View 1 (cartoon, helix red, strand yellow):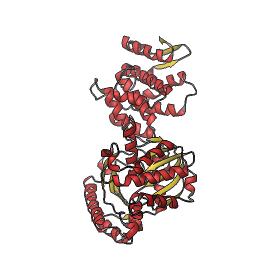
View 2 (tube, rainbow, N blue to C red):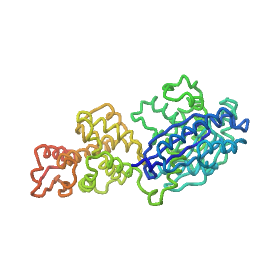
View 3 (tube, rainbow, N blue to C red):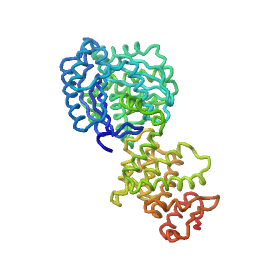
View 4 (cartoon, one colour):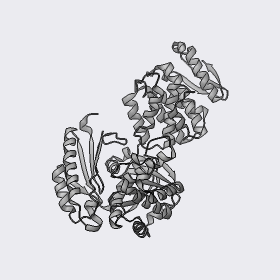
Amino acid sequence: MSLGDTVAIIDIGSNSVRLVVYENLSRAPGQVFNEKEMAGLGRQVATTGMLAADAVEKALAALVRFRILCEAMHVAQLRVIATAAARYASNGPDFIARAEAAVGQPIELISGDREAYLSALGVISGFDRPNGVVGDLGGGSLELAAVDGSRVGEGVSLALGGLALMDRSKNSIKTAEKIVRDDLDNHPQLAAMRGRDFFAVGGTWRALATLHQRQSGYPLNVMHGYTVPAREASEFVRLVERADATMLESIEAISSARRPLLAYGALVLDQLIKRGRPRQVVISAHGVREGLMHEQLAPTERDADALLRGAQDYNQLRARDPRHAADLLPWAERLLDSAYPNDDPALKRLQIAACLLSDIGWRAHPDYRGEQTLNVIAHAPFSGVDHAGRAFLSLTAFYRYAGLKGAAPAAEGLRRLLTPRVLERAHVVAAIFRVAYLMSAGMPGILSQTTLACDDRRLILTLPPEFRSLASQRVTGRLKQLARLLGREVEIR
């Protein structure tokens, strides 16, 4: 990657001004830099109709700083957007003019409908075939839009952001509850939520999810894709509504600027669950900015599998020889197809990703490769994969390096996220890798000349005459391990 490929987005929101710089414009772009300033532009807009002077100065100073950073990083493309606070304030046009001078770039003041559309598009970019309703809670507004696969339904924007609610209710939770109930009446997006997923976008909802993770002892510290059954989420947010934020367990994990908004974010989520009756709440780290990126992609690139594209990037950057994956994929697939005919397509997709990630930990010290690779994959910025999928990919790599009986606290935690059937498959795929890498040393040109498959009774490795010596005692031992998992006997031809 050259720095000239980078794409940056500055998002001037009601609560924060944020700069995100991405490696490039692609289906699975990595973030190079992410920084924010909690300017609080929307703090008084609902009651005064104006952006507060001190918030404006904070935002302008952040924009000057972000312009300097983008110039230093030789950003090829910079887009700047502004949302609810600048949209609603009577001095919004004056602020936009000053902001454009500060950042040296035209600013797109997006409408509420477009904000809802971009948030939904961001969720589409971040999940595999999402189905439900997206809610994006900012400081000034709440956007709602239905999603189904790659389709976005009609959106709506409501003045229910955390700062707006605090302002409108004069810091009264009881008054805020009535405002939320009244504003949520008669919106079709709530009816579209019933029995489907509710995708929660926005920093306040991510903060609530952080608290829930910490209090429940959840084993994976990743926000994107974190899922809570609707009833459990409702019970938790009601607790947050009633509690003094400073007394909440694990509150130190939440920034002091975000804490006053927690009760208002909890109130909005509680009312959405009550009225919409979703199946579960799914936290999305993707929103408007990722929607902007996704919107610019060619249709064929939009349709690409985000998880597999991300795994391909990791293979290209970290494997000993990225070409080895092109040999490993069909080699492993042949065995898995013969062992598990009519297999689950979702599991087959994860197996492909596991092949692409199978050699990314080779540089680590042998004593720690398993745990280090597990942590890299578990916390990688992959999209298009749920937490059970992350656990499968992480454990497959862990057992490939640490052995099929390997143990570590992080691995034990991730095992909880998998069903026994999927955990067994992780062992099988890891056992395949343990044979493949011992035979090939992670280099291309060997596996492609051999085959591994099974029939009803036998696990059969077929080698050409010039490769017969590859069936060493250690390779044979690992074949026997794999055969036991599959309930077969080993045969080498």
